[in-house]
Amino acid sequence: MPIQELTDVGSMPRLGDVPARMHAQLIRPERYGDPLTAFAIETVSTPRPGPGQVLVHVMAAGVNYNNVWAALGRPVDVIAARRKAGEAEDFHIGGSDASGIVWAVGEGVDSVRIGDHVVAHCGVWDAADPWITDGGDPIVAPSAQIWGYETNWGSFAQYTLVQAHQLLPKSPRLSWAAAAASTLVGATAYRMLCSWDPHTVREHDVVLVWGGSGGLGSQAIQIARAKGAIPIAVTSGPERGQYCMDLGARGYIDRRDFSHWGVIPDWRDDAAFATWTAGARAFGKALWDVLGERRNPRIVFEHPGEDTIPTSIFVCDNGGMVVICAGTTGYHAAVDLRYLWMRQKRLQGSHFANDQECAAYNAMVASGEVDPCLSRTFAFNEVGLAHQLMRENKHPMGNMSVLVGARDAEQRD
Figure 1 (cartoon, rainbow, N blue to C red):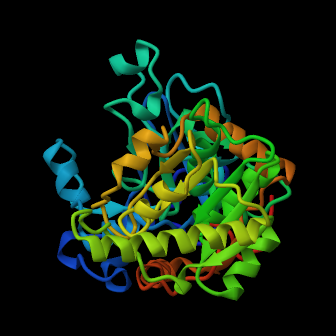
Figure 2: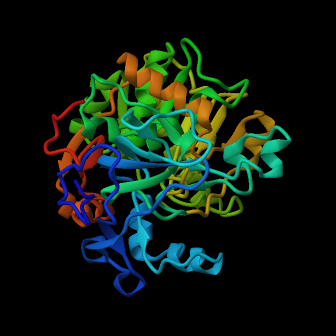
């Protein structure tokens, strides 16, 4: 039987047969803007795996904010950046989370076989990078990138091209959609909480989790709770707060009860600084009230950035750590350095994860310690809609997935 030129989304050719072309959700520079119109389904040539690479038949793809940025064309024009680096494609296929089936393998790949059911993490790098060959952490290497954002051929397509080390075994207890939903945010949260020695999360630690009902926060709450810590969520409203408590948070703080957010005032402006300090102290008291004792968080799990960093530094315990992986409210984060140096607190940047951390997170999911928190599943033609909801902050709590090869949200192996 000849290999098909193109198959419909949701249909599957014979295992290992690679169609010449595939359907994909593409972003092109002339469509930059709202995700709803930036994404469009087109057909393109199916990529072929080179040495160390694997072609995966995508069953479902996770939704992350990075491809809202890709759709907007800012703060980075990812297509222009890759063209400048010498790549030929004038389009972007996003998607930095996937579940699927190994469909073809490149030279030298022996870690997976055709037919394996896998999930993909989004960390890619050049194994020959001197940073890595000298023993450095690969995700810190100059060559490290995020697959499906900084690289092309992500998971919003029938087939995706990955480096073999990205692949992890899919848990058979999860649907394809659930398995695809959370590896980016979950592995990010795992590194933030478990890898910055000596500030690794431990039993009885108080952990303050900003955005607790979101994709990242939902994973952080569960990881902290599984390690015996006491997570306290910051969220917006009782419905989201209850969601966090159902995941294992001791309680929650409603950020809408406070108005001191934003860049900290100039310390020489006595009135403004006093107003800000009163707001930060009130937030700290709310934390104590939720906890039931006057104890500050040893770890503050940060990602809003500009609006919240001053408060995070303020309420963090003496000798504790504020660990941050993003700046969703902005990148300008001023702090009162007196609290940072005199109380010997740590402000730590953290970016995604390495293979070992991804595997450790995946094991927690496979064992049932951590749930991917899949809240909504979209059809393949709704990729733009999913990202538009995320851009407008109208997306549901937890994480979202897009069906590609899978026919429904409950379909399993």
